[in-house]
Image (cartoon, rainbow, N blue to C red; front, side):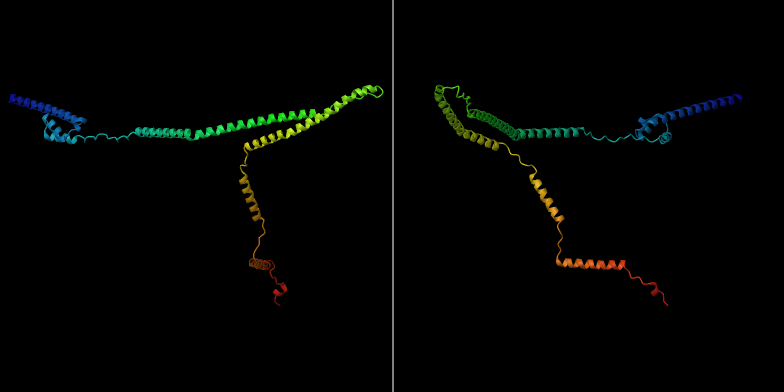
Length: 292
C-alpha cells in the first residue's frame, strides 16, 4: 500500500510539473504571439494571413481570435498635403517676356529717334550755327565799315582845316622889293584853299554813297536778327480785360426798374412802421389805470 501510494504521488507530481511547464510554455508562446501581432509590419497585413500564421505555430483558433481582438487597430499612415507647385518657371517666363518687350520697345524707339527726330535736331542746330556765323559776319562787317567811316571822317576834318598863315613882317622892316617878290607866293596860297575846298566837296559827295551802304547793311542785319515775342502778352491782356470787367461789375450802381423801386419803398415803409410800434409802445398813465 505504501509503495502504490508513493508511486501515485510521484505520478501526480510529475503530471503537475508537466501541466505547469506546459502552462508556462503556453503563456510564453501567447506572449510571443501578442508581441508579434503588435509589430507595425504585421499590423499592416490582413487578419486571415495573421490567423493562418498563428495556427501554424500551434495556437488554437480561440487563442488566435482573442489575441487578434487584443491587438490595437493599425495606425493609418501619415498623410501630408501635397506641396504647391513651384512658381519659379512662371516668374522666369514673365521676366523674360518683360525683358523682350523692353528690348523691342527700346529698339523701336531708337530706330524712330535716329530716323525722324535726330535729323531734325541736327538740322536745327546746324541752322542755328549758320545763323550765328552769319550774324557774327554781319557784325564784323559793321565794325569794319564803322572804323573806315570814322577814319575817313577824321581825315576829312584834318584836310578841311585852314592852312596856317605866317605872321606878316612890319612895313618898316620890309622893303618894296620884298613885297613884289611875295606877290606870286600869295597868289599860290590863295589857289591852294580853293583846291582844298573842291576836294572836300568831292569827298562829301562821295560820303552819302558809303552811308547808304551802311544803312542798307544795318537794315539787313535788323531783318536777319530774330525778333523776340512776348511770351505772356495775350495772357496779360486777357487778365487785364477780366480785371476791368470785374471792377466795372463790382462798383457799378444798381439800377432798378420802376415797379421794383416802388415795392422796395413800400417794404421800407412797412419795416419803419413795425420798428416804431415796437420801440414806442403806448404806455397808459397810472391815474387812468386806478379806478375811483
